[in-house]
Length: 379
Image (cartoon, rainbow, N blue to C red; front, side):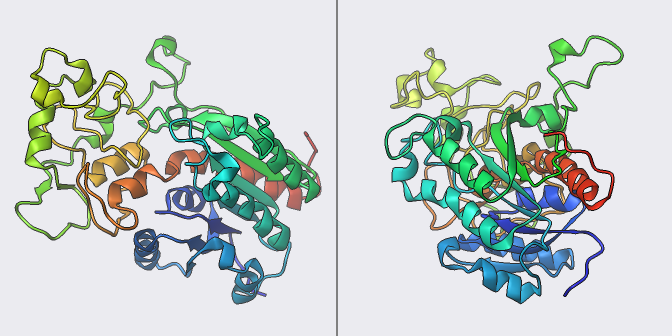
């Protein structure tokens, strides 16, 4: 049996490691990661090496990887791991997608969390998903059926699940990103979701109120000018690298801070192109004085005052990644295509580390309480 000074955790659907960062910062030792994407695995391994951790990265299809093998590799038995966590692919449930739910193979991946939990029997689980999961239709067409089935599966394994829709900006992230977190622990169950640490500026009028939301301008300041792709093909370690094509620079020119191109009807028609009033996130220039819109995998947002994309490092600042963290893999243009996940997508698909940390700290408190002799059940 391997002994650890810190609580132990296993990471599924690890992506670029945003959730992992928060869990590590909360005081857990991440023993292994499971991830399919090649570039994300390169990112994970690079940071594990730099931080001199011994985390094992399993690269491959999660459906084909045995949770029992992971336990055997680590020298653990079922019931000995403290936390199992992950953010399964959310496109099947996303409100901006086709919402095929369980008809999409990515929707079925959600239940890999159940398969792993059944085999590993962790003391707690943490799952992150889009809000659309709450209303996703099951195979019978019943709204909310998938979520109900998932919760029932957790309960059948002896867990007490709790869930909450959380706004990243409430926890110091410069982004208006809403996601549902599901936390499941066994009795005695004292888990409570963390209280917000920040609030809207309109709600911060008195001396004892929370500080206002962190803004885009606050987090991207101090980076200086990015290195241009025309200067070098070598992506720097800090990923502050500008790949904006000339035509995209021309099209965003004249779009005011905080606005999108399609709303600027006074601009030439050839500049607006085929965009319609529904294209509110395409050619969107962020506002320095507000948190960002939700960073996504498809569209790259533009700098508040410069005619260029935000760089991956600026995305990481907005998402709450530490500057010491590095990404691996290519950086694509807004309309380019790259096999596997490029750096902007790695960030946009990940969980903001400060949000993961806030939830993981509360899970840690619950687990430590469970291990003591005086923990009260507050179910």
